[in-house]
Length: 318
Image (cartoon, rainbow, N blue to C red):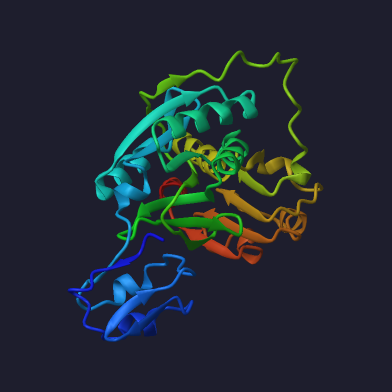
């Protein structure tokens, strides 16, 4: 049980008792007593007026370091982890591993984490990242926070993460207590990654590439207008990668009905046929220059203005 009480500082104010939602604390003879059902949610730590209740420090929770795992020489998650590590006064160590065999890759990561007593492991929420992360979390008996856009290590040693929901439109907050945690981050702009290569054994023999699933089955679709300027087109493709989406040419859509959870149209004016084709989409986000464009009638969220600037702003938000 990581929470302790400094009896000399404790004044028996009962603020901790009122803050605890688990009946895991009491005040006996003027002093706070922590019970075994404490989940270390840190509510009592924050409520104590004399700072008499002590929890694990961020460095202790992370085993003194954060392990960053990526699969290439450029990483879209390392800059985010570096910022978090500086705030938590923790070290971030990077490794690169071949994800072709997810089982072998996860075994190598687990061994690395155990050897260095690392309690916080971060992988990309992209490609094989989610599958490898799930195996690592199971192997370490760790908590798993997947699909995060950002995270911090809080004062109690837990991990607080902002997670993308409903196709990336809504952001929610999640927290784990001190202990082993695996986080997957949605990659942003890639930067050079000097991670140490991690040996995951010989890669499995590869016999061709698996076919891409039909766009009709995609959960997230990004439609790009063929008339987009190069910078808007590049931003649109980056948005698709960040969301894990399928990309389509908007001109090929009429007549082909789509019903993804999220449909993002960039520079697409729309039409009666286009709107009918996306009528089954859960959420429609449109980036257009004209507020009166036909797609405005189908959009749940309409971003009006310079399409290049809007696309860059959306990419930055992701």
